[in-house]
Length: 286
Ligand code: SF4
Ligand code: SF4
Image (cartoon, protein in one colour):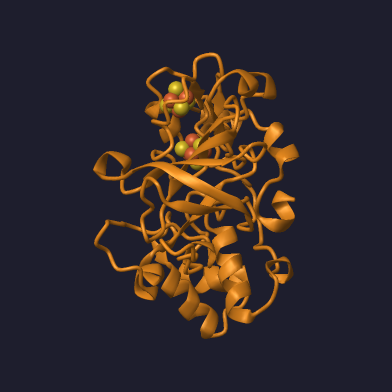
């Protein structure tokens, strides 16, 4: 599912070291780290005041959650650049509760209704926002607590706030390429320009607009976009931006993302230490 569609299903998430296990989830609110790519990244580890997240060495390890130490405080959510961290509470009687990162406009407010989206971005149900925190402490990511219908706590991973008259205010921009918006504030206009300025490739700092321009100039495969813009040539080697670029190509070409060819992969397939590539003699200082 993940390789084919770009998002995981529950079975894949259960296999991750960031999944706390059903037993823990039946007893307490707990962080779920939906982080499947071995990229050099570990802010979640430093963010946890309880030491409940472990990445260790090498830094490309997948993060592991220690469910016994996690209090469900949510301090790790805004620190994850991949928006891969959620806190889930399945222990409540009438509903489940999900705390999730949100980087689109308009900003949600406590008391608002929200359409609850699954990992594919499909509307699953109507929920209620009970808390929304943003600001510098959250690094411009809004951390939203949403009540969702019972049984959907491990399914809902996004929201679209609903306006007063019950009409969705979703512009589709957050699902339109999947890129992370650079800097959102309450006063910022939710325009297509903002979307274009968002970074598609954070390693090489290539904007969504640069990728779109390259596609419109004829770069209709991830490799062609990479040659023109350098998107995918950075440290993560396309693990972060690859799906965003593929989705932008699909959108611009009006075709399903499954028909976009994958980018070429060359060894090493993930970052490794220099010691691993030195010859024996070199590593011994000869
Ligand atoms: S929810 Fe709180 S305690 Fe749990 S892993 Fe995140 S920061 Fe640590
Ligand atoms: S992407 Fe998020 S969950 Fe994964 S290692 Fe980085 S900070 Fe942690």
